Length: 444
Image 1 (cartoon, rainbow, N blue to C red):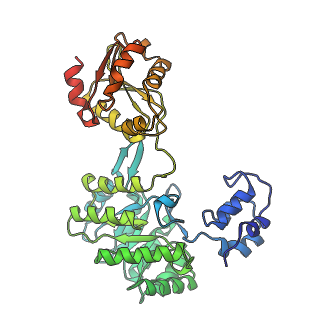
Image 2 (image 1 turned 90 degrees about the vertical axis):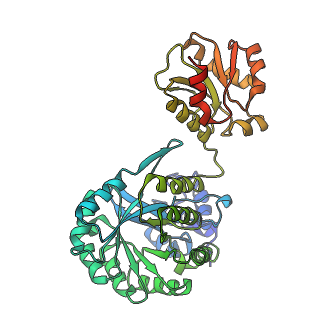
């Protein structure tokens, strides 16, 4: 039976110390009761109270950590079925596989490619989260695992269906706390013993959701507490159905046997199909995507999907409303303005940078709305633009009085010229991608 907030509150220190990140102990108790916080996040709760309440108050999906030290990846502890209900908590990770057929030089090169797969989009760094080492067929599994562990900048997944092979490799790298992938109905007890002994997480696969639930109970009884539900994409539609059933059982029914995050191994025949399938499973409901390829053109669409899905829909994605200098602008450089919606700003800034023409970009506070939405919602006006530009003292930085405005706001032109010192207002392009050609043509 689920605990109420008052039952949890009575077992808390009730000091309102705020060390949990919330203003009061009652607020924390309400979050625990709603399965949005773990009881262990209160640093002052007594061991006795934690023992009495931990199982009943635990979030519906366990938080799992792969790795150790500064190379870790956390996933799980999701609380909702749909993003609009609140938000998804921890972004899906991408794991790139190093095939058993690779020799040491090829494996080294693949690790280097994984380490360098870091991209920046709308001010956020996107990267590959894990390195998956295929061991079945490798002549020396321990040496291969140790080699990758020493070179990789990200946590490891050890891949083998043989308990003997897995033990050999795990003994060599257990200090980095890899994920063991994967146990099935015939190997679950052996793998669970390995995971429990090394204190590492274990992925388990089953022929059905029902069998998977049975196997997690077996593994837990063997001492493997940190479990991951493993799926593949041989039958994508069936896999999505199973993922949805497992998540609903955990979150809506508090069914502990399926209350674990997931890993989905891609089985795309080409990089293109792998990308499409990966984006699909990032939305429903993979915690980790295991892929074969590592080309930027394949990774970025999936990373972009993950980034978009795992933003908080209740919090506008904004940049600071201030004057930004792109390149090293001088007193004859162009001046333009845009909104403080992150995607809008970074799109504009990126295209200005691509134009190789240094410029000033004045960012107007529109409460995180893009140009058209801000205009429709009365969050941007000529008066606000003029006041913002004046407060940022842009006129002191340039000797001209030319201002480029978004092409979607041509109606602002005459009024800005009439009410400000910017006497030559130039209507810019409607989309950011047109900026380089536009600047090359009009700014000489």
